[in-house]
Amino acid sequence: MDLNVVTLLYLVASVCFIQALKGLSNPKTARIGNTFGMAGMSIAIVTTLALVVKQTSGSGLDLRSGIVLLVAALIVGGAIGAYVAARVEMTKMPELVAAMHSLIGLAAVCIAYGVVAEPAAFGLATVAESIPYGNRAELFVGTFVGAITFSGSVIAFGKLSGKYRFRLFQGAPVVYAGQHLINLALAIAMIFFGVEFFLTQSWLPFVVMTVIALFWVY
Image (cartoon, rainbow, N blue to C red; front, side, top):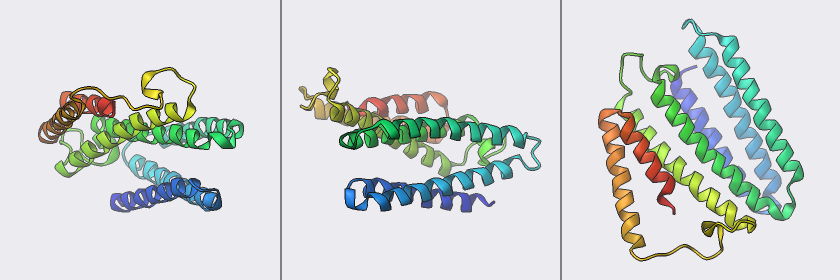
């Protein structure tokens, strides 16, 4: 399967997930939202299976091990999701959506780190080559958006739950003197380290940029 097709299919799956979240926000459209969610996940699973087959064919990698790991992840994740969905109350649905949304952001960060660590496994470059600049920009944007999504969704989960005494999970927003200037400085620093990673593909600026993005919403 061509990597451009893979990217397109993942994009379609992402649109389905967004439509699923939009549909689940209203009881009248919840069924349609679930349908979009199942369609998006089906596309993502089939595309990932095809990608595993493509990357292992003719490369000396063990196809069976890749399939086993993928199926194991599906079983574990599906079991946890089914258990939580069966126990959650209808009044707790916004809280559940926030929790699941945080995992989406965390997954984006983990995937980006996997790509930076082993670009050859994703077909972006050989072992001796550097990641193309276009992909570095994509990794930079995907990582900080995923990190901010994770942190923001965790805070939303805590606020919607109302069971935790942690200050960030209280109803009133956290404000302090010079907050906007600090946030601006953090945003500039995050962009600076992101550009540094873009130019050098070094781990240090990539990690620092991720840490800033994780704490930027605080």
